[in-house]
Length: 319
Image (cartoon, rainbow, N blue to C red; front, side, top):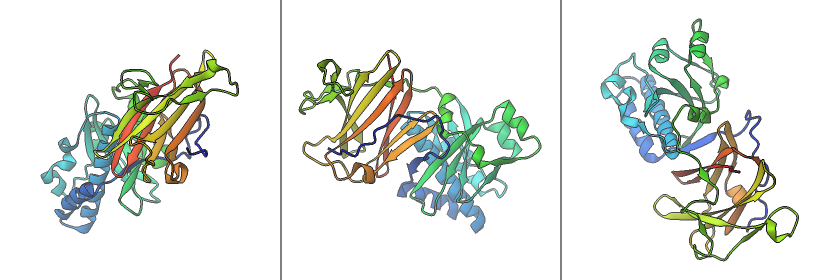
C-alpha cells in the first residue's frame, strides 16, 4: 500500500491556479484532423481546421465521459463544403437539450479570442481548449455561457480575454446531468468478500472505538476493454454536517500492481482539485485517498485515465 497518500480536504474555494482537466487526443482523432486540414487551399486555413477539429473532438470526448450526449458529426465543422469556404471558421458542437457551443482552440501564450457576432446569435456558449507543443492531449481551459449580460458586454468589442473563462465544469450547471452516485451504496457496490478480497477495515479518527471502524465496500470500474480496477470506499460520519471519506484503489487482478500509467483526477463543479499520476501512485498494489471534513451536499468526481480512455464517477456526500 502506498503510504504517501493524497490526504486532505477537497478544497475548491479558490479555483484560480488549479490544474486543468486534461483530455487525451488519440491517433485516430489526429488522423481525422489531418485529413480535414489537407482539404484546404492554403496552409493557414489548414492549420486552423486541424486545431478546430481536435478542439471539437476533445469537447465531445469530455462530455461523453460525463455521460452527456453531443453530436460530433452534426456541426458545421464536420461539413466538408463549409470547411472549404474561406470565410468559414467553425468549431461547433451540438449538445443534446442545450444547443451549439463553439470550441475555441487556445494556443500557448494566447491571451484573447475573437467572438464574431454570428456566434453570439447561433451558439449558447463557448469552451476554450488549450493546446500545448505536443498534440497528444489538450486541457479544458474553461466555459462561457452566452447570456444577455455577456452579449451586452461584447457590444463594443468582440475580444474576449481567455482569463475570463469560467471553469469548464461550469457547463454542467446548464446540462441535464445524471444524478451523482451514493458512496458505497447501491447494487454496484459489493463487500470485499464478494469481490474475492479480504475484508478491510477503515479506522476512523484517532479513536480505536469499534463504532468508528467502517468496512470498505468496492465497485468494479472498467477502463477500456482490457483493464479493471476496484474502487473501495468507506465513509466516517463526523457530525450531522460533515464526513470523511476514504477511497482505496486496487487492480482487479489479485496480487497485481496498479497500471503504471494510471492517472486519477479529482474535480468539483468549480474546477480540478488535483491530478494524481505515477509520481504519486508509485509502483504499488494499491493507492489510498482520504478527503476530510466534507460538507453534506458536496458533489465531486473521480476520473480514471489510462492511455486514451477516461472513466468518470460522480459522487455526492449524503447525510
